[in-house]
Image (cartoon, one colour):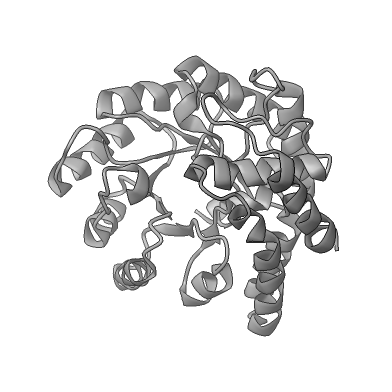
Length: 305
């Protein structure tokens, strides 16, 4: 599964000022990322505002990204839905649209135990013909944390090929790395961290899925290359530069997580000329005024440097 390693950013979905999907802008984002040296594209994750789109819109976004990418890097499609039947329907549509792999979470809103969650992943894997990743993101899943032993067992069974870990639980991730290694490394392990990527790569992550790479893919590319050279001093220097730019997400105060995080990414991308508008999916309001100005200052002082 070496093709699913390295820097695999979750692609931002640019919108017009009227709130419509900006497909031409999406082409620009894909080109910005691929030219920036990323190793793959994760379509329809949290950073892509997946929760706000209809199934048809999700497929249309993935189709456009696949077309623009033209096979240059692998594309992983997010089939994020509440229950197994809905995930399977979405995953099959994503596969038909050209996804090289599928990533999905455990069920949410529905309340399942770990055995039921394991059977959920088995059912999804059986319904598709491309590799399946498990997405561990408790903050969006009723607080459910995927058990590391369950994940490794699913890897040994060939049900999943990897895990995208956005739990923020570094101890849990280290336990997953250790359990995976002890089982012969059946899983590719991707961290969703932004600012401790150097540490996660040092302890055994196979790659990273950072939303902030939409803003600054080149530094993440350089960080990945430094890690492959085992040059950890250089990796830390680059990580410190990334963290200085990532301060953009702390500028908004009293806003939702989507507005502060994805909203800051979009505002920085607009300042850099990557996208034309920082509009967010309804009902999230775009950042503006003093907040936008402060983000623009960080862009000018750090990201353009």
